[in-house]
Length: 87
Image (cartoon, rainbow, N blue to C red):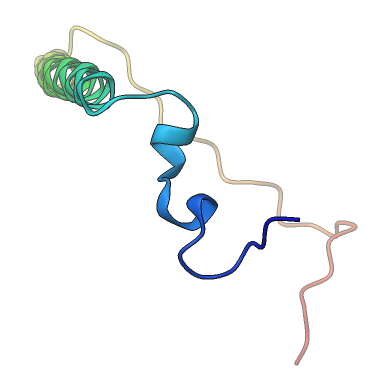
């Protein structure tokens, strides 16, 4: 029976090599992941810019009174089922 001690073949074979992946395949996979990360980062930047644009648009509309803006009505302060936590 073969031993599984230090220096045996199972100790010297990397998990990537054991699964059949080569360095080139791993590098290609890493490049694809980095490209996808870059795409997501660019989309995140674009969405952030769109959010700022939308916030500015809404602020300008509210400032010019083109939009009827109603403040939220204060909640009813009479008794409720809610009991505050007491320490």
